[in-house]
Structures are given as C-alpha cells and as structure tokens.
Image (cartoon, rainbow, N blue to C red; front, side, top):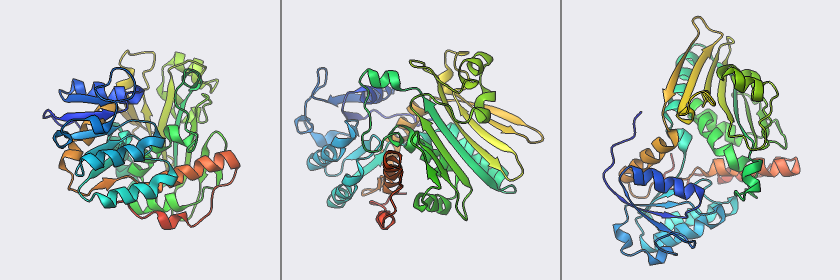
Length: 365
C-alpha cells in the first residue's frame, strides 16, 4: 500500500519533543506547511490560543505529554470546533477517558483519531492477509507478539516514562494493533474483555479462554528477550550470536526484537519479523519480512516500507475524508492496557465492571 499523494495542507503540531519533531519532519518532507506550538525555544507560538485564523488549519497534531492531551484537545476545539485532530497515543490517561467522551459530545463536528502506526502498516496488513488465507482451512492455535528493546539508555537521558500505563505504555498499543489485525472483530472484543491467565512484572501477558486462540504478549524495556526461537532465525548470524543466543539486548544498543508469530493447528507458523536486516543493511528500519514455516512449501517475502511515515500520511488523508463527528479513540484498548499496568505493579488484574464502559466514543470503528 502506498501513501496517498499530498495536497498541501496547513498542519499545526502541538508539542515539539522527539515524537512531535518526527511528525514535523514527515509532514514537512511531504510538502505540507508546518506550524508549531510549544513552550520551548523554536516553536511558532507558545499556546494554541495564539494560532492566528484557526479555521484555516487543515489538521492538528497533539504530541504533548499524555497527561496534557485532554486539555490540549479541549483548547483546540474551543478555537476550531470542527477541527481534524491526530492525537498521539495514548489518547489520554484512563481517568480522562470519560472527559474525552464529554469533549467529543460537546463538539459533534470534530474528527479525532489516535495515531495507530501498526494498523496502517503494509507489513502488518500483508501478514494478516497471509494468516487469514492459511487460517481459512487451518485454525489459529496460538498468537505470540514480542516487542523488546533495551530502553535503559533512553530513560537515563530523560525519555518519558509512563507512570500509569507502565511497561504497557511503550509497546502495548502497537501489539494490540497487530492482534486486532489478526483476530476477527468479535474475537478481538472478547479478548479485551477477558482477564488474562497471568501477567508478570516484565509484561508477559498470557490469555487462554474458550472461543479464543492462546495469546501471549511480551515486552521488555530492559532488553530481556523471551522468545528467541520464534524469530531469531530471521536475523544475520552476528545478530544471533550477539543478541538472540544470550536472549539479551545490552544497554545502549539500537537493536529491537519485534515480531508477531501465528501458530496454526497443523503446526505451521506465519511470522512477521520487523527489521530483520539490522547490522546488514543501512536501510534496515524500513525492511520487514513475513515467513511461512513448517509448511510445504515454506516461503517468505519482504516488505520495504517506512511504516511510520506511511501511517502518518495515510492517517492525514483519512482525517481529510472522515465524516464530521467521527472519532476513533478505542477506549477499550486504553482500559485494558491500564489494567495490565496495574497488574504489573500490584500482581492483580482489576476485575471490575469496567467492561460496561467499553462503549465506543463517537463513531469509533
């Protein structure tokens, strides 16, 4: 899937940290007119209220710290009630979800979506298509998704640490996007309503329930690899020796061990491996692979795409075409990941009537 050709738009980016700067670079390179809001040096304005002629803004990006998202969205909609807003994940903290719902209802012409890179990734879409094709006659037995990186250097240098979603705040939304692409919609909704069988402190989440395949999600920000056997085969020999065999990514390394593996009832595996050419190709971040293993014949194919850039451009175009009042926030995912964060800290997954709150905000898909 190729990103749509841009027609120049005026985009105001609120928040010029690392992620906001990435938005600015991506949209600027695509030929859009970029304006910025931040209290730090280098921005065009310090507050949303200072943006002249807000009605002329084609899209807003909110890339401020999560705790400020609701206040920033409120301020944008105060000045442009029909604004198109791309909101960096998480949309907000769990206690603000109801407030975000009220904001949406007060502004029925607004269009708001939460950045969902992996949902719009060609690599994920082609992987999911392969799973559906094989799964039509060979049901899914287990899904395993691992997103591991050693983030200790990032934290030591002041990168944001999520105090509410915890470990789940780093990669949880990405892993759920992949799971959502694989599972039929009703099964996915059932998964979000199911209390996991176990949750460990480094966020290994196991779920086994009637009507669902076994699902295991794992992420580590200390570089501890959990499933070397499921994707290690896809990497160069020196990467296997340095990282996969010891199952550990050292402090300061840029290596990321990210994959999604689907085991079918027959024993076949369909595996999506992100960035398998680390250390072997200067453009490794934009090359991904899908492997079909333990099948006759086995096979694999490569997808060369910058899925971050692709997703940002696709979502900008999506905002342009959404009907007024369309909001895609996915509160059920936010509540599920907040519950995981709580379970990692306390050892107990909250069992409340939160499922009653899983109603959609706006016309969320």
